[in-house]
Length: 152
Ligand code: ACO
Image 1 (cartoon, rainbow, N blue to C red):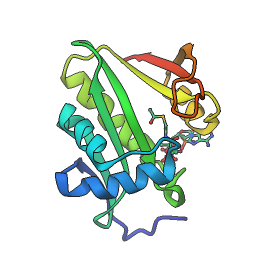
Image 2 (cartoon, helix red, strand yellow):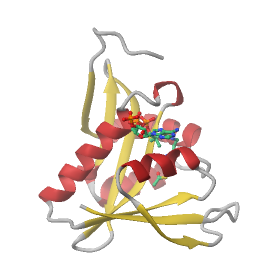
Image 3 (tube, rainbow, N blue to C red):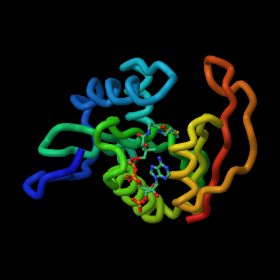
Image 4 (cartoon, rainbow, N blue to C red):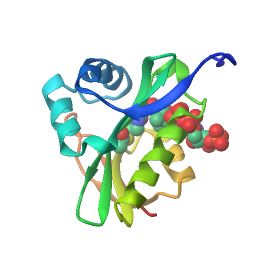
C-alpha cells in the first residue's frame, strides 16, 4: 500500500479509548494472545511510552515501552498493521520512543523478539540493537526469544 499525499500520519500518546484497537493490532501481528486487561497494565506501567501512530485518525501501529531499571528501558510491544508495513511507521515510532528515553536519562534499551521473527530482527538490527543472549522457551508455545540491547 502506498500513502497518498493527502494522508496525515501522526504519533500521539495512547488513550484508554485506544486500547481495544491496539489489542486488535497486537493480536493480528504478534503470535502471543493479548487481552485488554494485559494491554491496560502495559498502558499504566509507563503511559508516556505507550504511543500510537494514526493515519487519518485511524490507529495503524503502536509501541509500548516500559522501564527495566532507572537507566534502562524496554520495548514491550511494537507492531504495525500488516498492509502499512515498510512505509517507515515502525521507524517513526522507534525514533519517538528513543527521544522519550533520552528525555528520561535512559541509557539503554532492551527487548525480546522471537528467534524466527526475521523481519523484526532485521528492523532492530537496523537500529543498532545487538543480540545479547537467547532466552529458551520464552513464549507460550515454548519458542525461544533473542534478548536484544542497544545503548542510546
Ligand atoms: N526486512 C529487512 N529490513 C526491514 C524489514 C524487513 N522485512 N522491515 C523493516 N526493515 C528495516 C528497513 O531497513 C527499514 O529501513 P528503510 O525504510 O530505510 O529501508 C527500517 O527497518 C524501518 O522500516 P519501517 O518501514 O519503519 O518498519 P515497519 O513500519 O514495517 O515496522 C515492524 C517494523 C514493527 C517490525 C513490523 O514489521 C511489524 O509490525 N511486524 C509484526 C509485529 C512484530 O513482529 N513486532 C516486533 C515484535 S518484538 C517486540 O514487540 C518487542
